[in-house]
Length: 243
Image (cartoon, rainbow, N blue to C red; front, side, top):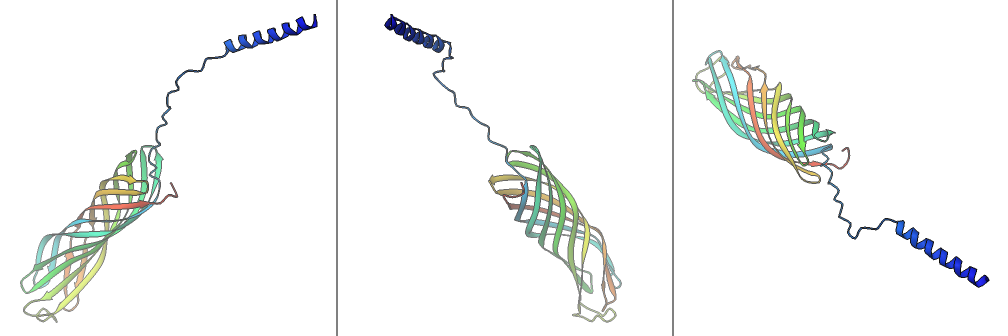
């Protein structure tokens, strides 16, 4: 009798296991690969870089007095090169706000002969402090920018013939100053590597009018507003911190 009871218990346990296994979900024969989308490029953080390109300068309403009194405008083209530093705030996945400062040397000069004298203008540098507002699509950004600008120029007056007060033929006088104004522009930027950004941009700089004096000849130069156009390309290195 005991032997029959043991056999019945074993058979019941086996049957219960089979029923429980039948209730379990059947594992699929194939699990599809789950692809996780790559995160958008993070534009946030500090960056520093270099740039170079062309510069075009128009000097409106140059007036020289007294003596060879003349009023004219000059245009000249040249080259520019410099660097920039800034910080990006990655506000939302499609918008970047930046603050950027730059310094660019200018190679622009022009000479006007006014009869008994000549006047040479040389633009030395321009620097800006700007905000940038960018729309991004992963590694590509298009932006508008604007802010304040400063520019330095030097005038050299040479007495060619005759005498103007104390200036005899061959007398050379120079006067220079830094002028302030505003700037606006636009550009595109592309992150071609995790920490490297390439850009191309256009900046329009408008410097205010100014007066320059030459004490030997007792003459003056009055310069009107001075538009400067900069077309430049550059590369930035974005640091891994601050994003």
